[in-house]
Structure formats: C-alpha cells, structure tokens
Length: 127
Image (tube, rainbow, N blue to C red; front, side, top):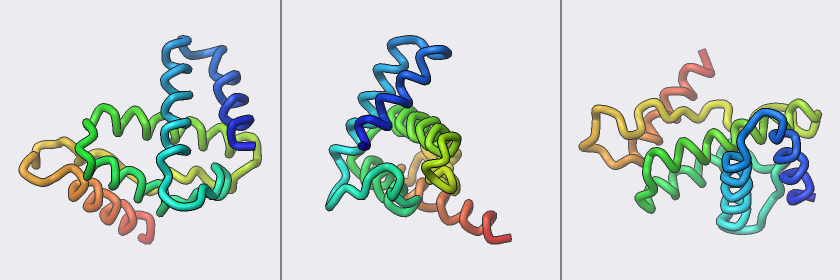
C-alpha cells in the first residue's frame, strides 16, 4: 500500500515538477521508509514524533542541512497530498521547523538546534 501511495503522489507531481525533482522525491520517500528503525507503521500511521525522531537521527549522523531540508520538503508535499486525498487528518510535519538548523548559532550541533526548534514550535502551538 505504501509504495502505491508513493507512486500515486509522484504521478500527481508530473504536471508541475521536473523529472529530476520527482526522482529525488521518490528516493527520499524510499529512504525514509527503509531507514525507519523498528516496525514500519505505514505512511498514514507515521506520527509527528516518529518523523521528528527521524530528522534528529539524521542530524546526529551529520547529514547536511540541505539534505535535511530537501527530505523535509519531500515529506511536507507528500503529507499534503495524503491530506488532500483524505488519507490523513493532518500533515505529520506540522510542528517541525528547521529555521535555526545551520543558522548563525553554528557552535551547537545541528540536532540540538533541531530539538530547540521543535520545542519552540511546540510552545507556539499550545498558545
């Protein structure tokens, strides 16, 4: 089912994105699904906390900010698609910000900046 959702999403993108971008999105979705630690819950059941954990793990691995942002863009668009299709109730990337990652506070590890960004956004969401 997950691979069919990915294929439908990528097919939908053909009208507005370059073939190279679509291929990159496909690689990103496949990578996230394959790299999930533990039992894969499926795209429609993957929680915001699980996605946050994925990005934190990637930052700890030393992945570049550009790669992180590209993977986040892919997932945001994919979850927007799932939302439009009525398959999820909300975009699971809501509440995850990357504004501070790689910013002026370069003396902190990227994953710490990501955690601070998540905390800050959670505070905003509860106001």
